[in-house]
Structure formats: C-alpha cells, structure tokens
Image (cartoon, rainbow, N blue to C red; front, side):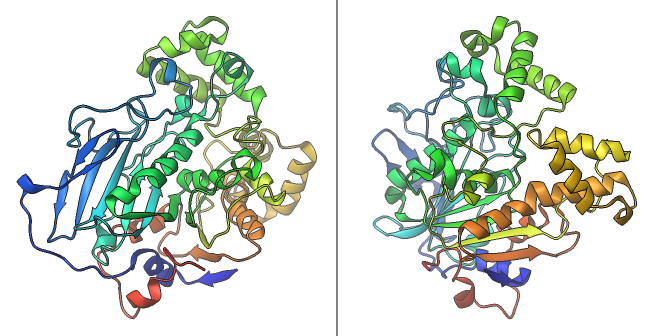
Amino acid sequence: MRFLSLSSLVLLSIALVEGTPTKTTTKASLPSITLDYCTVVATAGNSTLGYYKYQNIRYAAVPTGVRRFAKPEWPPRETIVNNGSLAASDVDCSSAEDCLYIDVWAPANSKGKNLPVMVWTYGGGFTGGSKSQNTPEGLFNLSTEFVFVAYNYRLGLTGLANGPTLLHQGGTSNTALWDVQHAFQWTKKYIHAFGGNPNEITAVGFSAGASQVLFQTTRFSGHNEQLFQRAYVMSPGFVPGAGHQHSEAFWQNVSTAVNCTGGSLSCMRSVDFTTLNTAATAVQSKYTYQFQPRVDGDMVADTYEAQMYQKRFNFKGPAVITHELHEVNGAAWSGVNTTADVATYLRIFFSAIKDAVVERALELYPESDYSSPGLRFSDMKQSFDLTAHNLAFTQVMNNKTWNAEVALGAATHGTDQSYYCKFPLPPPPFSKTYTNQLFFAKS
C-alpha cells in the first residue's frame, strides 16, 4: 500500500498527457460518429478546445413497461441522427425513467487513435446524481489525450428493488448494478469509434459511484469478466443492508401504497413513474429503509466487502482508493439523541448486525470519548460505512494500492470533488510527467 499526500493525489488524478489543439471548426461542421445502431453528432466543443462532447447516446433500451425491474437490453436501431436532444443534458434517473444515456467526450481528430479511457460513475446515495455531475473540462485543460465517458444508472426503487415476490415473478433485483455492468460493456464495445482503447479503461467513482465500481469487481462472486484495467475509488459509500427480509417488506409496503395487490410485478410496472417514486419515498421515510444494493444470490452473492475478505473477487489493478478525514464524523447524526439511540441506529443502518457485534462496537467507541450520542454514532458510521471499505479493498489487493486520506478544508464527504474535474491548472511544483502515473498507469 502506498500513501499519497492530497496535493499529489489531486494532480495524479487530473494531469494526464498534454494535448495539442488543431484548427477551429464551426458548429455547422461538428463531427459525427456512426455506430452499428445509431449516428451521433457532437453537441459541444471545437478543435481549438481540442475536444468534442457527444451527448445522450442510448446505451440501453428505455427501461419502461416490461423493462422496468428488468436487466438492461441493448438499444434498438435508430433511424434519426442523434444530436444530443433525446433528453436534457442533465437528465437523471430519479426524475425520468427514460434515462439510460451515456456521454462521451473525445479529443478532436481522435479517429483511429487508441487512447486510454476514463469512465466516471457518479455518487448520490443510490437515490440521486447523474452523468452531468462531474464533467472533464478541467482535465482537458491539462491533456486531450484520453476519452472521458459518463453514464446514468437507475436509482431508488427502480434501481434497487429486491425480494422473493419480485424475483419469483421474473423481475430482476439490483438493476442499478446491471446498468453499470452494461455501461462498461457498451464502452468496451463502442469506445474505439471515438478513438478510445477498450483495453485501457480506468473506472473512476465517488461515494455510491465508487461502490458501484467495487460491486463490479465482486459481481457473481468474482466469476466474471474484468470490465476495466484500473480503478480510482473515492469515499466508497455503501451500507451493507440485509437481503430479502427487509427488501420484501419494502416491496410489499410500496405495492400496497400504489394499489398493486400482493406485490404484483405486472401492476408495479404499470404504475406511473412519479407515483411509484412518491410512494417509495414515503415508505422509506416511514420505516427508515436504506436504499442500497442488497444481497440477492445472483449478481450480489454477498456484500462486496464480505466477498473481498473471502477472495471472491476479479480485478488485478492498479488502483487508488481514498477517503476524507471527516467523512461524516464532524457533526452529530440527526435523530441519535440518547445512548439507546446509538444501538438502535446501528441496527437500522446495518440490519444484519448481531447483538454481540453491537455490544463490541459500543465498547470500541466508548461513550466517554464523545460529547454527544450523535457524534459517537457518526464516528461509528464513518468507520463501518465508509473507511472500512478501503481496508477491505486494500487487503484483497494484497496492499498493492495507492491509498490517500483527504485533509483539505472541512474534509467532509465530497470535499475532494471540487479538486478533480473542475481544477483548471496544476499548482506548482507538481509536474504533468509525475502526475501521469496514476490514472492510466499500467503497473
């Protein structure tokens, strides 16, 4: 395991290889890319900037009707040229069901090149966020010798539903994870058309997005294709919730709220998307249900943390994994007001936790060390929900990782994000030669 200062880490992540601008083009001559099912025209950029953005490319069929609560399917052939207007540029899967789009930012004159590829997966607690959350302009200020990809995945109930009733009727659990797998498969299949190398992909993710990256390394108990060659994982956030018991109760409660007797899948697929999400949010709030991927015996045989410790894992690295100094422990956790609340909230967030483990946690985080029960729980949650994932990943990688603790400013969850894609130029004395070693390093 190698430790990095934050200053080095930021630059390691953004300074790649310096690109060379070419002559200016006009909007009328924006380039297009033809794939085997569609043609897409760039929506932004020019050769002076050195890159173009191809926006809202369908990477999967619209997940409505019978495709709701189902694995993503390859998109149908399109007869109209895609100029990026199939949806809003910031379309997200929490407010629109037709949301499975991917954006590609490619260098000008990239045709025929074999450039490294960065695939970005956003965070948002598995209930929010979108592909437009972070964009690569700051990275392209330093280099245009790579291709940047960002995509949406399903969120909330439509991305995380689970339980026997859903599965026995032919539904698919944890569709959000299937979407992520499909987006990487799309990238491997089509990125060459944008000048990218399908065998030089770096998976980059933050918070829930970082956990999405880790889930891909343990899917199907590690009996899977490695979808990327490198990983850059920032503050992986994932509460390892129990499987069918709670998810089944949640499914039944939501189905009752929308008048789908017995959790009928066909009925749940027919309910208006907004109505369904409103009901799910109300039930979540009432029962403090955690929207997280849950064990399903299929893609998720166990939590990724547990599978890493059991060596059910398929990823060779290299990899970077980071966390903030004060991910969540800088403030008291809302709702935790008494000593009894601490144990209660441990059971809420970690629903499979055993009484003996709760007791041991209370011993390891003694009440006398904290000024309030809320701060005590926040410190526990930081360790169990966030930084513990770093330890599991480092261990399964046999310490062959770059590890970093972010200590800039408040150093709370997400502080580091403003230092990545939006960083215009590297501060001295760090060089691009030095900082090029991580994102696309081969060993």
